[in-house]
Length: 341
Ligand code: HPA
Ligand code: ZN
Image (cartoon, rainbow, N blue to C red; front, side, top):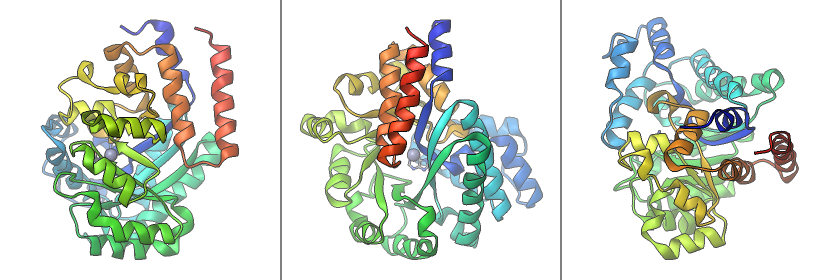
């Protein structure tokens, strides 16, 4: 059990979230509402049926349902509403800064204009700052099960909106789609001024993490939990302070770990890696960032200091400027002083 004090501490802690797919925040209620107004038939007719369908045995079984959900999204307003709903939840959990993935190819391949997707998301991010004081950045992911040429065309589509996007990433089906497939795309993205991140070592081997670092020049690894299979790699991640955006509830839902008690988050922390906790696809995996922290604390016996380290790592690993990072870490440190353990 989380003691009451520690639970409240986790709820109130100033947080940064670095790994959340905006399409994965589409709650069943909003999915039904948007599908209804767009007259998109869903295989599942009620919110209850949707919840029941959210049983996954690996990444692919989840992605099949996730892409089905994205089919409801058509207009700029849909993307605005989706993003706003996430930001409201995030603000309630005292997320002070969010770096959000979007999957343009999941939409442009259905005929939705790139412009509608990014403008809807961007408008919500802009509007939220004065309302909740929550800062944000946008990361455009390429779907790795599609071709490198398709990723390159998506990169071209993004260029008119370059100022709204901080980085590019790589997601979708990992096994069989090694980072090396995207070397040219990521090199070109860097030339255009984007930072880079990649999902690696979620289901894939440690070598995919190494490829992401050496071939795609990523600043962070998304997931990365399979690094523990390779001690040389772990030493490098620690030495170079490469952040890992770990998503505990996601990993259990997708059977990367049998249970949260078996998760290696605490081990990674104790090895001194720059680990962060994130929600990935919270509408599908049973919780936002606070629920991820609460459940991990309970299952792994995380200490108050561990929770602080996770929060601090996230601000440090963000794509904010040095000044902005210092401001948020100052806020976090004042929070710690005001809530002595
Ligand atoms: N892994 C890979 N691709 C994804 C995920 C994930 O957890 N969520 C959305 N796209
Ligand atoms: Zn992810």
